[in-house]
Length: 104
Image 1 (spheres, one colour):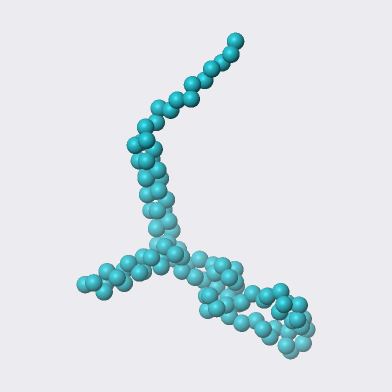
Image 2 (cartoon, rainbow, N blue to C red; image 1 turned 135 degrees about the vertical axis):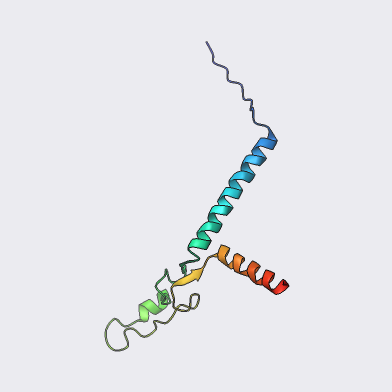
């Protein structure tokens, strides 16, 4: 005896679009809430340390002892030494606020 399974779907295209739009709206609201609660995140360039990472060439040439051992470590250019950066969503909110305020 052979089992035959029909490959039919009961979903209509309109239902799939509505479901996708609902999930996208839920994700956007969740990300907006996260940006409101925690507007800063760790800098990707320095991993939140605030100091610029050494390139491979600088690591090979760096001295490990002596008064010049720490020379070459400077503030990260992306986060200016804080180790934090604004999230993209928070930047968008700040831009919209400034635009609205300028329009008044």
